[in-house]
Structure formats: C-alpha cells, structure tokens
Amino acid sequence: MTQTSETAAVVEPPAGGRGTARTRVHRAWFVAAVTFVTIIGAAAFRSVPGLFIDPLHDEYGWSRGTIGAAVSVNLALYGLTAPFAAALMDRYGIRRVVAVALTVIALGSGLTVWMTAAWQLMLCWGLLVGLGSGSMALAFAATVTNRWFTERRGLVSGILTAASASGQLIFLPVLSWIVDRYDWRPAAVTVALAALAVVPFVWLLLHDHPADVGQKPYGAEEFVPKPAPVPGAARRAVTVLFSAVRTGPFWLLAGTFAICGASTNGLIQTHFVPASHDHGMPITTAASLLAVIGVFDVVGTVASGWFTDRYDSRRLLAVYYALRGVSLLFLPMLLAPGVHPPMIFFIVFYGLDWVATVPPTLALCREHYGDDSPIVFGWVLASHQVGAAVVAFVGGVARDAFGSYDVVWIASGALCAAAALMALVIRRPAAAPAAAA
Image (cartoon, rainbow, N blue to C red; front, side):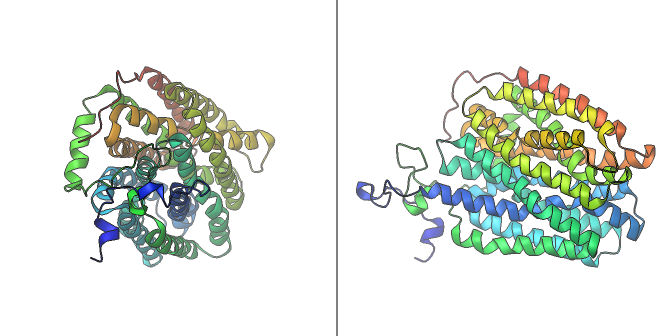
C-alpha cells in the first residue's frame, strides 16, 4: 500500500531497540524544531495588525474602530478554531492540517492587496487569516508536545510558545521598514510568502506520531502505538467542551487566559504602535520596541516552562498576572516621542511576562483533563482570543472616543489583578485523570 506511512499505526517497537541508538538525538527534538519553524512562519501575520492601523486609516478613511473590528474577528476566529483544529489533527494528522492552514493564511494575506472596502478586510484579514492562524494556534504546540514527549513537557511547551515571539522578532522590524519605506501592500505579500515557504518543511519533515518512525515518545519507558484516526472531529471538540464546562478549573483557566489575551494580543500587540505614534514616536521605533518584547518573550517563556516542571503552576500564574497588571498601570506615564530607560525597562519586563502564562496553563489542563487536554486547551485558548478580540475592538473605539488609550491601559491592569486572584483559586485534581479509552 502507498498510504502506510500516513495512516497505518506502528504497533510494535523495533526489535531489540534498533534504530534508537543512545548517542543519537531523539527524533522528538527534530519534530519540535520543525514545529518551532512552522509557528515562526505563521507568526508573521501576528506582527501585522499594529503596523497597518494607521496606513489603512490614512488610505481608506476607515475608523480605528472599523479596523479594530477586523482585527477582533481575526483574533476571535484564531481562538475558536483551535479546539476543532486539535480534533482535526487527531482525525487527519498534524501534517495535513498544518499545511492547509499555512496555505489559507497565505491566501488571506495575499488577497488584501486588492481590497477596496471594509467588508473585504473582514473577509481576508478577519475570516481567512483567522481560520488559518487558528489552526496554527497553541493547540498545535500542545498536540506535538503531548504526542512526542513524556518528559520535559513544560520546557518544550515553553520553547514552542516562544516560537510566535521569535516570529514577531524576525518579522516586525522588516515589516515596519517595508510599510514605512514602501506601503502596507508589500508587507502583506511578504507575510503570504513567509507562510508558503514553510509548507514544504511541514510536508516533508513533520511526522504525526513517534510510532511513525518506530520510536517511543521522549522520556517514555514503553513504546506507544499510534492511535487510530478519531472520526467526528467537530463532535469530539464539542463533546469535550460540554464535559469541561461542568468543572470549576475550566472556567478559572478560561477566565485567566481571556485576560491574558486582552492584555497581550488585544492590547499591546494591536495598539502599542499606534499609541506610541500618538505621542510622537516614529512607527519604526515603536515596532522595534515591540520586537524587543519578542526577544525577551523567548527568554521568559522558556524559563517559565522550566519553572513549570518544578513549581506550582497556580502560583506561577498568580505572580505573572500580578506583575503584568502593575506594569500596565505605569505605561501611560512612559509613552513619549523618544525611547528612555523607564520605557526600556517596561519593554524588557513585559517581554519576559508576555506569554509566560502558557506553560503553566498547559500543565494545569494536563493535570485536570488528561488525554483530552489539547482540545480543552484549545477551548481555553479560544477564551484567550475572545478576550483579545474584545480589547482590540474596544481599544480602537476608546481611542476614537477619548483621543488616547489611557483608560484602556488602566482597565487592563485591573483585569490582570483579578486574573492573579483567580489563578490562586484553582484546585489541584484529587487524582490523575484516567487515560481515554
């Protein structure tokens, strides 16, 4: 048969352990590396919204609220697609789902260069890129981590989460320079080409399961057969949701993660550049500061994964949210035409805390929901993006109404304080969840 490598399960390990030489690097690390590069390619579009708000406003006369609405559609779909994408990966395999998602991202970003009306922005930037990037969301990283690793999961989830920040680091300075020097259209084309460039790596190198290459998951003592494809992906995603919503930890995790999204993707990533520009800072300078957040996000997220393997995830979340809230309260006093030491301190600090919340949130999902945790985390991520979508829209409306973003910074700081308290309320599971049949 020609489809054996794609659909058939390897049910036995290689005899005598051949093919797993002690001196070789475990294949799981290569899969994690390909996943990292893939998320970087998809992250190009995550760098765009803050750079395009002013150019679109100037060219088309669209209000910031209208542009923010398109961003909010994108962010909401990014989250709402994630749990279904995790289920689709169980049904059709990681490789197929991710390759299609990257193609959809490229299509949506490329089509924006011909748009002339706001509804087309909603369609291309909101719908297509939202669906594509949602399939490349953190549920993708969770699925890879759960399948390929039984040890170092916190560290690996931190590294893969940092991939999005690395993409921001790579693309933000380049895209801001393109927008400033030429126009927003070449930047949109650059995003499309970046997404397409990753597709061959995914198709050739991203294996769905360790059994596909005759290996055990990293750190596992026993060989794990590849499970059969799970039919009814949409039904399973909804069934898992209905089961999870009956538990208290789900609502606390979803609530804290909604605030996480509101204070990162919805607030800083979308509105930091135009807010800095309001205070006289050049767009390229503000974009460079946002890229520096990406530098320290890599450090903070990987460190958070290391901490998650060793410390109580609930207390880690409480510390992260509390410190983030304090920093946001100071931001209105730091915005200025130039870059000064207190602003640099804010950028470094906020970068370290940007998505440091992901590894402990993933760990708590695994503790409470076992084999269903990637899908549960997908729904928790949906709340993250709904929170981001609300603030992306409300932030633009507030700027139109009040002439500044000050009220949004302060309100977001207060929300982060509430998230810190919510994290402390999450209870430990009484016993490890049973493996799914």
